[in-house]
Image 1 (cartoon, one colour):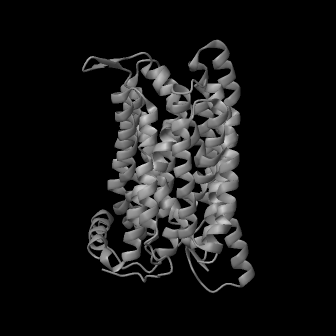
Image 2 (cartoon, rainbow, N blue to C red; image 1 turned 90 degrees about the horizontal axis):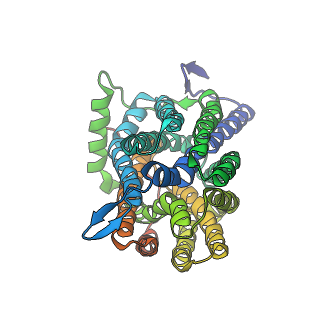
Image 3 (cartoon, helix red, strand yellow; image 1 turned 135 degrees about the vertical axis):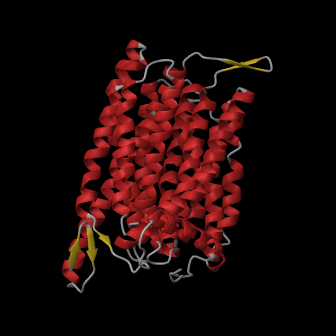
Length: 444
């Protein structure tokens, strides 16, 4: 085996050496999931989502045809939509560049550091700094979501078609453990903020979450080695090459019909999943009257079901196939959506939340595994770029629609029940995918 920078040029090795190397890489890969969920739970789902609406936006109101509304939901959804649009438009090209240059890990590091830096900067926000708060959220979300394109691209490298579901499930399960720990770190600050009726006490949680993300992502960059693939030799501009390859892939997408079918289904149902993630904390706070402390306690409990869901469904994915697993999780999401609409008590919301936790971990894990099974070898980052394209473009519509329906009707319940469309339609479309097909890489 020869090394070149942070790359590995593969040579024949003994089975024991290969197994030890893969175990270390799988551990480091899942640890990145453990690290990055500190952003998703502290910034996107729980603390900053509520902090932005109630502390940064505060009591600001606007008049709409005689109705007076707080624009917090709309602005939060707008920030999510803008960041997702940028990631969606750039991901396939950036993924193609990474595949050509064999530098997925370097791209991952840059996006990760952008996200970590933004998390720390949230500490300095004050009430009324709406534009700054929105811009930081957009940049941080681009860093987080963009990094996943390259991170997911390593999954086929460290797995086989026989265990890809299990390893993907491991990643999400360990990730939700990271979410739980992040919430437990934030809980004392939430308790003090509740007692003092002062959300500014929550500010240190952003710095702690940034440190958590940075420290626990480091093993990935040390232990996971990037394999050189037999990409066509490119001299000169990688950006131009990535752009050309992306266009060529789009033109030849008809050669990958099952990937197209899956991406269409994923486009629909993941919109509902991402919208729930974006607004569940705000829904609990605004509609059900949860305090910040109660929201954190609620999500800490939900993480337990998410951990078990990702872990158990990871095994089910390998046993029954990712397609059937996704269909089961979509049925769970339908139950969650209807349950949330009719929820009027904390106890009922806890039941809905526990089911949502199982559905969340398993649907994301099985989707990543199904995409990994269908992707031609050597085109992982590029096709995970298209995977991100579908997920992020769909996430433009969901949060925007939720925020718009909320501000127009004055009720988040009408917004939540609209998500039924995404889960029911996704269930119908995913049933048309043949997950047993395999594709070979094409070259320009």
